[in-house]
Length: 264
Ligand SMILES: NC(=O)c1ccc[n+]([C@@H]2O[C@H](COP(=O)([O-])OP(=O)(O)OC[C@H]3O[C@@H](n4cnc5c(N)ncnc54)[C@H](O)[C@@H]3O)[C@@H](O)[C@H]2O)c1
Image (cartoon, rainbow, N blue to C red):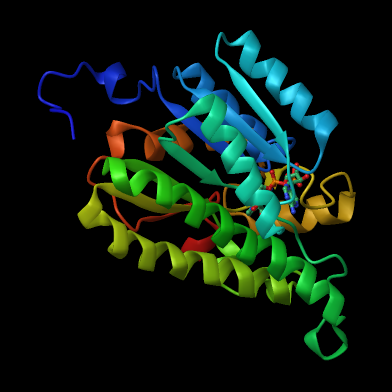
């Protein structure tokens, strides 16, 4: 770790010369995180299944003066993830920062007794297994250098059941698993100089939920003590904090960014 004593405050958040990877970078929070990293000086690899969206995020990174590396990949496909990391190694190494951000909600929110197995598999494959595949590949590259930042984007629904507002059993199960995986990885890798932390967002206007539906908006807004939902941009400060030297002694933190929902 570099000395902090002589750092000017902006240097704490400076990522010049670093290489970051954001999964789920074609939409929502992934776009905002990729922009924040590029604004702080990092080159940014971008993983997503949505090639058109990726191209738009890549253009934003380029416009900020940094190099993007968009790769179309399904993070729930183990071989495809290994291949994508190999492509990254060839063009973009070494990896300093991973945001495990790609995720999905329950395709048909409902009570568990009538929940379709294929939906359960879909959600766990992306939210949990995809997180595992990407974390493993990134950590294998960070360990030899004894440095790195791994940030898992979980959810406030990894800390409490969503059914008080709508039923999302697979989402809740996978996000809870990602929260506790974060704690376990923080313990495994803190001695090796790698910070592992999680962000647990509350309601942010993205494509993960039907934020255009007035009923959904009314329910989420009234559930949130701040009295509003967040714009995707509002993830940037926390993302940059966890990606940078500013969080040098932060390991296993579960940062809840939710307008007060989990304080209730
Ligand atoms: N927006 C919220 O209110 C909110 C709240 C809590 C947690 N989160 C979490 O934040 C993360 C980002 O979601 P978002 O809100 O930006 O939603 P979003 O739907 O706007 O973006 C998710 C992105 O992940 C990509 N993705 C989905 N499955 C993938 C796969 N198998 N492989 C690669 N990419 C895949 C999608 O194509 C999309 O671009 C997710 O993990 C989500 O669970 C969001």
